[in-house]
Length: 112
Length: 114
Image (cartoon, rainbow over all chains, first blue to last red):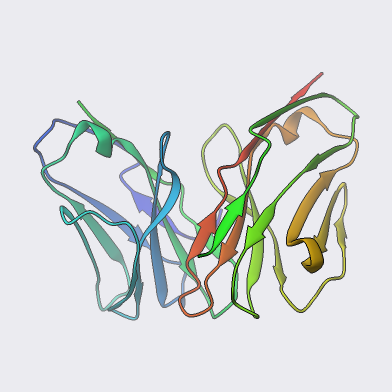
């Protein structure tokens, strides 16, 4: 158990819909990262938050947004969903610079 | 640009064979970190090792060993006496200095047959 929790574990929805994925980092970790794992794109960094502030952005679509709350949990919002958004979405947290990231179990999103 | 290449898409071995997974990276940073993660069939990403760019010592942990060579920009992973439970996808990753975001290779699927 990495100590990072993600909900829900599975999500099935239709094109055009909006979903919210939730992540709670390990106790004390201020940094949260979101990654997307899909068959065609592999594992890709989406966005990072540090103590409530956006720190870095990767190949994140404009239809996607995220935030980190004062209690340090983070949410990834995906809107106007398309079939191609079907993927495994991971959240990871980091204790400090250069440390390893610990990953949550992932949320598997299926868009029908 | 930073990049991680895992040229081996899939490797199949029989139990007890040794197997080496290759990883080649590109970066302009002088300080960086390299990682290996394991993704078993259950899907989670499990951290295996972290190595910083100033530490070229090889590391051994049980049946696992890692060979880091800055001269060839490689960070290879060897499993000795492989077991069926080693079957998984293995990812090599490089972290970006300012943000610690991970740049992953495409992964190597290892299948160990009894």
